[in-house]
Structure formats: C-alpha cells, structure tokens
Image (cartoon, rainbow over all chains, first blue to last red; front, side):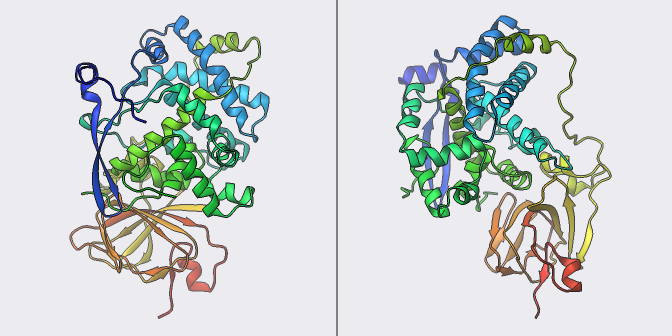
Amino acid sequence: MLIQPPEAFVSGVLGNQIAEWGMITGNRKSVNKVVMLAESTADEWSDLLIRVGADQDREAYTRLFHHYAPLLKGFLMKGSNIRHEQAEELAQETMIKVWRRADSFNRQKSSASTWIYTIARNCRIDWIRREMRRQRNIHADDLYEPGEDNPSQVSLVQVRNKRIVRDSIDSLPQEQKEVISKIYFEGRTHSEVSEELSLPLGTVKSRIRLALKRLNVQLDADTEEV
Amino acid sequence: MQVSKHPDSDLLIDYAAGALGPALCVSISSHLHFCQDCRGKNSELTNLGGSFLESLEPAQLSTNALDEVLARLDEIEHEPQTLETAQKNLKTDEARLPNLVKKLIPDQGVKWQFLSPALRISRLVVGENRYELALHKIKAGGKAPDHGHNGLEITVVLQGSFSDEDGVYHEGDFLVRQPGDVHRPTASQNDSCICLSVSEAPIKLVGPIKRLLNPFFSVTPQ
C-alpha cells in the first residue's frame, strides 16, 4: 500500500521525490505513478546517521548502536548457518562499517534500515566466502555496484509503515515464511532452497511470489501473477 | 536505447537477498547499470531486506559489545582493500565498460584470447567454481561460430550490439540461454560488441578441439 500524503505536503516537502516510473511488462509499457516517501517524522535513525557522518557524533552513534546492533544480531542469527558468536562478530563488524561510512549515507536514496541492511548483507557474503576459503576473495562491496540514477530520476524510497510490515511477516503462512527466510536470512538461492526442502523449483517460486505480494512488494506493474 | 531483455524476478530477489555467487552477482549488477526499471525493482527488494531487519526479534549482545566497538572506532584500521579501476591499461572501448567490470580486469589490461577469427574471450577471475565469468568480444560485423550451450549461459551486452536468429540485442540486454540452445551471434556492422558472460562450468569436455574451445563455445558439428 502506498502512503499517499496530502497534496500540499507532497509538493512542499517532498515534491522532488515523486517519480514517474515506467515499467516494462512483456511488450506493454505502462507508466505507474509511484509516490515514494522518505520517512518524514518517524525516521530519527536517518537523522542520527547523518549526525554521525557529518560530525562523528558518538552520542548519535551510541543510540544507533543500541537500536541496530541487537537487530543485526537477530537478523544474522535467523540464518541457521550462522552461530551465535559469529552473528555477534558480524553485527559488530557491520556497526563499525556504519561508523566509517556514515558520510556516504544519502537519505534520498535509502532509509537507514535499508542502508544498514546492505552493509550487513555484504558482511555476511564476505564471511561465507572467507569460510569457503576462496582463492580470490573479492569483496561483496565490489560486486554490488548498480548504476546511479541521474538526479532527476532518483530512485526513491518507498517506506512502509513498520507495524504493517511486521504484521505481514508474522502473518505469512509458515510455508511462505520458510522459503523467504531461507533466501533473505540464510542467503540461499531459489534453487538451493528447492534442493534443501525437496520442493519443485516452481513451488518455491510461487511461494515467494505469494509472500512478496502479501508483503506488498510490487515487481510487475501490470501482471497479476499466481 | 531502451533495455528490452531483463533478468527474471527470481534472480533479482536472490541478488537483493545476497544469495548469488560472485559471477551471477556481477551479471545482475551489470544489467542494473543500464536498466532503470530493474534498479527500481532492486530497491524494492532491498528495502524489503531493510524492513526485515527492523521487524525481527532483537538478540541480546554481550555486555561489553558497545565498549568494544567504541574502542575500535579510533583504530586506524583500513577498510579491506577494494578493487581499483585506476591505472589500468585499457583500450578506448574497454574504458567505457561499467565500473564494476573494469575493476575485475587485471591491471595489465584485458588479455583477449583467440576463439575464432571474429571472436575473442577474456576470463575474469572472481574465485568461483560453479560459474565462469568472461568477456567476449565480437568484431564489427563478425560472426561467432555456431555454438551450443552445455549449461546455463547468461550474456549481458556491455557495449555495441549483436543479433542472432531471435533478435537484436543492445547494451544492457540480459539474455539467458538454456543448455542445448544453439545460436550464432553476429555483431552489428559498425561497432564491435563486448558482452559479459556467465557460464555454468562444463561437467565434461570432449575431444581435442572442443577442449580448446570449451568451456565457452563448443562448436557444433556441421
């Protein structure tokens, strides 16, 4: 569900953050007007991150730490392939990177949670690859470098109501929760999940699709799938 | 030029969740470099990761975790060395490649190896066994030999364009070939074409000639 703000609010505060987002679906092109909001009042975390980036503000950092470090540990422990101590270590590593990179955080591009999520995700990838003792270790940060949108089409953050999202995850049927957890928390691909759970790939795909739909992630503009 | 061939959602999901190995990861990042629509989908899927992070049960940290971390903030500790694009010996056309691909090119520059009169290959090392990552270059107007695919192959057009029996592909297009597909790519007349390819490592190599051409191209007998 997109949060539609009052018109004046949009043009006044977030006027430059409305994008016309052309989506190609099959051969048809449809333009979806997607209103995306940066978190406004609620996002104290972004404010804190910006303070850390601009002034190396330790008080702000400490507050971020109290909020995010336990969440990061919880997130990493959700993956059954990561032990308790390793989750703690990775959570700390992530928080140290948060400190070092805070000046590159841009609230126009992502929320604090999403930004921190990508750092944790890449720490996890690097850790898994270290464990596998790959000959050439290329850091995940070097593999994820999607192009930059030019400023007039800045890809904007769609921020959901936190409570709704939480409810949605918890309210997913067990079988959907299981597959999406394996992918997001354990870093398994669709096909790995299919092998691990002895499910046909098509079943994994359709469970993911249903889960995304319930979590309100819109990937295909026009098509009603499954 | 509008990108018209896109990765399917499964791959984008695996990418945003951090599940893909390095070679596939590079192929998606390369496509995103050119494709605004998929960048939009990717931010949706990445935001979902952020929402998951916020909505999970927090786990208790060890009692001195904060102190340990605060103490480490002042250490002059460098970020792990990331790859540089600077000071590489790149030819004009190579210099226009997406940044993340350039980072993977050895410092001495791209070493093109002969595959056929019109086709060159240069492997990129990313430390992965399952998939192999390479650049292919087809000379302007050149035809690659007919070839079949032993395993899944993904091609992303990075520069120029090429065509085969099914159509014309431009920069950013993301093509998936299934095992057994046979096709004969031809570069457009006015420009050479550079593609990124990810191939499932072949299980077996047959015959001396195939051994030379594999893993990327097994010439099908005429």
